[in-house]
Image 1 (cartoon, helix red, strand yellow):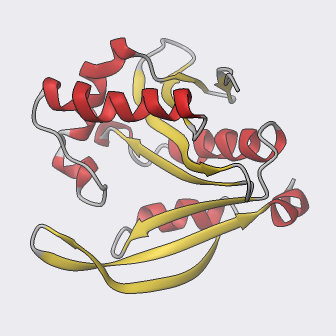
Image 2: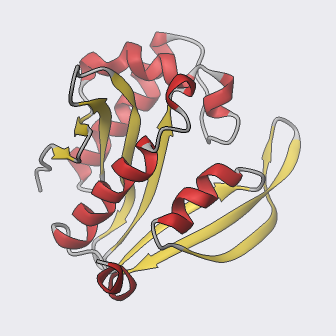
Length: 182
């Protein structure tokens, strides 16, 4: 399945491209961005070998898609948002997102994530979209709740990050609940 560009009132979302590697490094090397994120990179080589390969594999294997987020008015890149861990048999995928800190608090993530969620349900025929949030990441939890996701559980001390156990919160949104919101 090929995935189109998406748009909202203020934003344009296009599939991540190899030429975005430096921008991805800018975001995923910033400790403020990766404080509650599963990955952190220090070099362009790491980004190309790992994160850019991850984005490419999603498309090649049909297991998801990630889009860059930019302003329509000037195409300035702000962050990225996407679906991964797509399981076609179960019609579910996992939502993820990140944004450069200078753009926090402007509503760009709820706006872009809403477009990706809509695409997931209406074009990919998903029945369920999930999201995993590290304990303490209240902003991402608020975004998901704003989008209609339900916190379905907390797995205590589920993973080790920086030598410490962290909790993970599991959120889910079902197609039928999404349709009631629209």
